[in-house]
Image 1 (cartoon, rainbow, N blue to C red):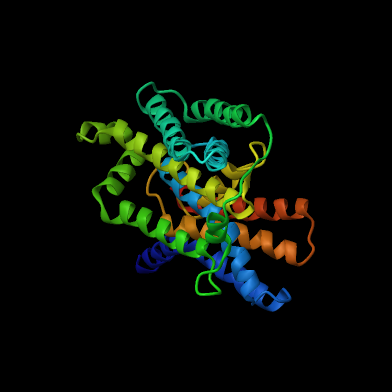
Image 2: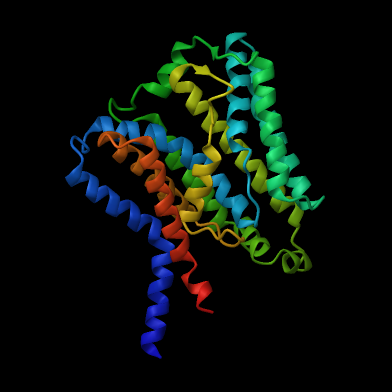
Length: 317
């Protein structure tokens, strides 16, 4: 009996930390197998790329914790970045403010449609995906919006203290804020309660509509921030390329990190490590001249393996 309980506790520990373990294993493999991996250039490139994925993944983990999904995050990135870029071009702070307000409004709309109108999250966010991408192309004439803002560009590209990318600090701040919301505030326990059993949560007096709307709205806000990061590095925003396939990486990071696909506890640290795993695979393949199709297949294998591992306990019941 004691041995069985010990095995159960070990399994729970492994499930909670599988993404971190995967990341550490990949890190060690790259240190010994990839030339010039241990360098500031690698460190800079890693955080410049992974921060965007991580921001969107943090929001996605909240949405998935409610039993939903949001496939409009890439389009939210594009719409926000294009509107903000146009605001910079025309020197209009109003357009920049409008960019985040509009994106968050679409997030709230998704939350209301899911919680109040009982429309499937996939259907709602699919519609918003096309709507926001279409708006981004419409207001930009389907062309790349390039702007000149030396101070803003320097903020995104110039390392802090001469070595550390600003993306690193943005990532730390975002993870800390979402972690506090989930683990140190009542809101986090209510999200988990709703994800585990929406009916019971409603009967306990939890305002489930507000919970769902909040999760979709915060995901939209984080997607806007990710879009600004992507546009800020290159001083331009292309409505067709910004945020492309971002929803796939975000969903994968959340699931690898241990957030249950059918709702429950949003594992914020696990999601962050899941994003690190996906980006590390991409960098590893690029630095070892592995083709992009092989990179995708490797990602798919790791995602399937992680999902299989997370489902072990459920299958044995």
